[in-house]
Length: 138
Ligand SMILES: [Zn+2]
Image 1 (cartoon, rainbow, N blue to C red):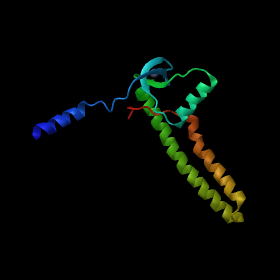
Image 2: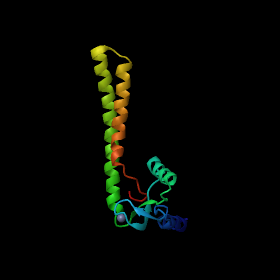
Image 3: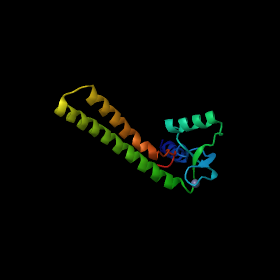
Image 4: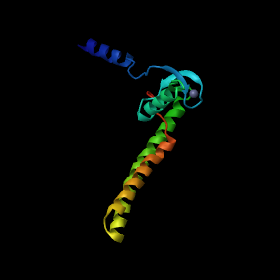
């Protein structure tokens, strides 16, 4: 029994589920063609790949090379905290704008529509600094 548990513990440690598969591609930070950790395929990466396919510029994978991985993780963290802030600001803007509209003129189309549009713009602003997530960078 005890031996079994020890073996399980060892095999658990030895498994490489935490190690992402390396791919060849263009490093997003230093721009070199290297082997590194591929970017996680969220919708922005899918869109970029679709765009490259459509334009016929060839499909270079976005990767983070070994020496840039730590810096990439920091940039991703900064982007994620900006997205969180963006969500908070969007909700605040929406509430304040609606409350102001109701206070000054009652609730209507011309309170609701600008509030929605403003909130969406605030939500999208952090994407100007979009940075992909890399597996194993956390
Ligand atoms: Zn690099």
